[in-house]
Length: 478
Image (cartoon, rainbow, N blue to C red; front, side, top):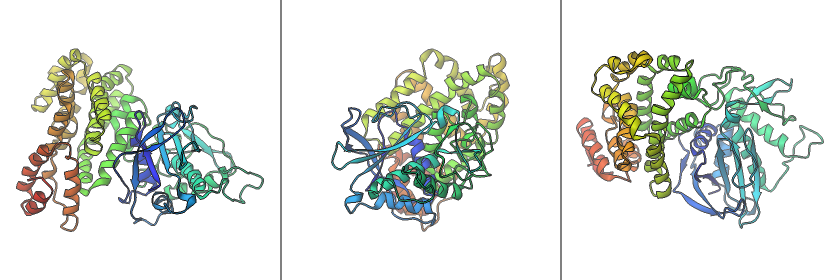
């Protein structure tokens, strides 16, 4: 195993996951092993918590996916003895080197440990939301999505692993750095995404949202609009990967919250066909009302602040805790950190105002009369949201639980378990018989932290999908 994701506190693991999925061309083969640690010596950090990447095979044949396969699986030989650790930061200082990484990426070797550790550190915030432009051969600014930045830095790591820095190149005579070789590799990914190609002899960058040449930030994303401040780091549907309301509330599609939520979504959709279809169903309903609400929020600073504080921050904290319980429940420190974030986002005084509105929505009652003053403008969109069963589960229920349980510092772990057990999976068609057993096994793993909740879901699945009872029993659902 040669490639690891840094899972230290404060690291943007969601964006790293999203960007690696893009590099793999979302072929579904990329995974993650259990958390572990590797030694370090820089920045006073002697032990780095990491999660190893797993990537057994490539199904797409894309060049970037093949390079990723090599980075993950080549472990023999002296040149490949050094682990590669990816640290995604939403701006700020690199904890190992100590310098400001905002708007930049860097790759270097920690030679103070054996084996050496190759560090890849990059900014996932698109320079604090300003965007990051490189330049084409005519000197025109061109957009640089996050996955392209990561692939560029992984090129440096690849050359370090080969023991060839700088990697031999003839494109830029006289240039003795490794940058031309990394930019040649970067253009491979740009070409796959349909983005403008970079001048491989020009390493300069600047803040901005330049041309895209009709390209995308992710394999399945829409074309990125040239010069749009909402296009930089993401993929998926418009408005920051389909996160219309979050993007409007935050003011940009490249904040940590938007990128992190997109990373959680991509991680779930890549795990199983069941989770992918569940998320697709949520988004299909969400898109029926969210653009209208987002359009009302975007031009109004007071509305943006209100939605950030009452909706985005509690939901962001809730989904962070749910992801950690489902994927890394053994890390008690991170679970407690995520729980504290919910407590902080849901103060008791505000809960007295928020909870009745949410309860009205969940009771299918109109909220028009219950919203004070100008907030009544949101009532039609909220009334539409309450009619959507997948949105009720994905947004309204966790928002209520975050405020009711979080405001009184209750048992959030159990609250998340109860919520996951209510996932309306039974409303979906069962998977094909070929993949059913494997998919149920992966879904069951989400509940390893709370087996009783798995059985609550299992009873509904057994009633809706009677032919699956043997497999449900095998994986602990019944």
